[in-house]
Amino acid sequence: MAERSSLVRLLDEYEVTLSWVGYELHPETPAGGVALAAHVPHAEAMLGCVKNFAAGFGIVDLVPPPRLVPTRRILAVAQLAREVGRLDALRAVAFDAYWRRGWGLESDEDLGWIAREADLDPAAALAAASDPARLAAVAEARREAIAAGVTGIPTFDFFSAPGRPPLRVVGCQPYEVLADAAVRAGADRR
Image (cartoon, rainbow, N blue to C red):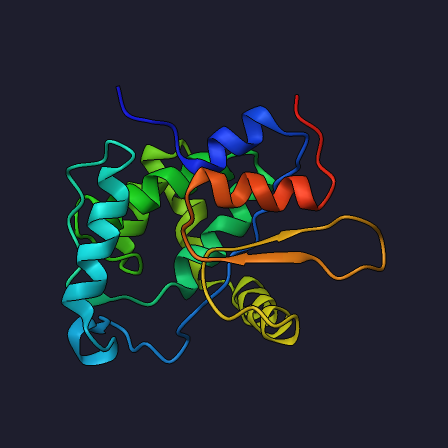
């Protein structure tokens, strides 16, 4: 049986609340994406680390994506999914499509399939993916993340008290790193 993800385990074991905010890391990515090797130095080594990390959680069928793909449209669909209570399902299906199937996250075909699998209306999802107000909200979330000092994804901010800066953890991290940050921020065990 695969080990639970660090985040799922943290949510199960500590009194913490997750507020997922989609963040467009590379808004300059053109339609159709770019070869990962042309965009990320040492892409093969980085993807090897990602595969090893995933294998630690029993995910052995990871298909490293050959391309960095635009995420603006799927992030707009995520706003719709949040509104109708399907955000977790959409995130799981989208991550699976990208990391296990090697699909993009921008074509109408891919977005329609992702929406159906996440139990969202595909027509509503495609409308959301092209909605100027939702796309503007995606851009605003990026501006806010940059203003807050977010430099990578995922970023976990553990807040200990109102007005105090968060304890920040950047990147996919083992459970122990996230649990330590939660404890240092004052989270109680369940």
